[in-house]
Length: 155
Image (cartoon, rainbow, N blue to C red; front, side):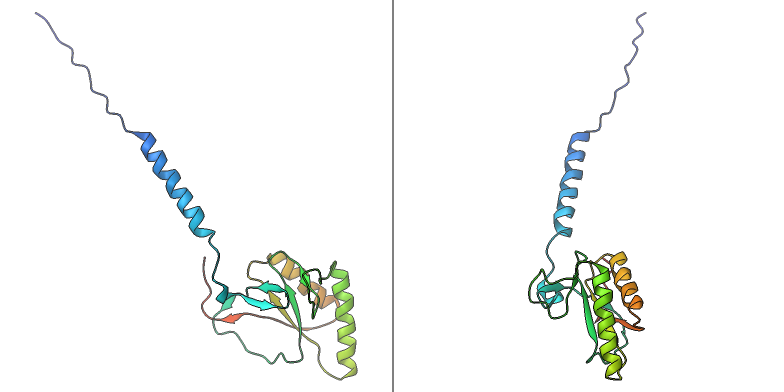
């Protein structure tokens, strides 16, 4: 009597095509997320391009006499009225000294010194806080942040 032992069939899953699909999806999403944003969302302020973040129902205040401090996405702090990209504060100490002069000028005119921080939405939070601390060290208490009205983008 011959007894046959049946061999179990092994089922193989083709892994290589799945890996190829995963890499194609990865490349697609990397390219899709790094596309340039339309220029309508960016403001040209002096020679620096500053893309201000959006916020719902921002409080509007009069900033006619306010000094604007521009913080770029790279972390540079622009000089007021700068005409070229090299017109920036080299250190925060220079910013504090300039703001002290501004505060004294405002006190002589019997006006409250007001600063508006115009920070790019891609600027590092740490840099914005450093600029804010420099303003406080100069003795200026009225500080505002510039935002555009609208719903903030989560992405």
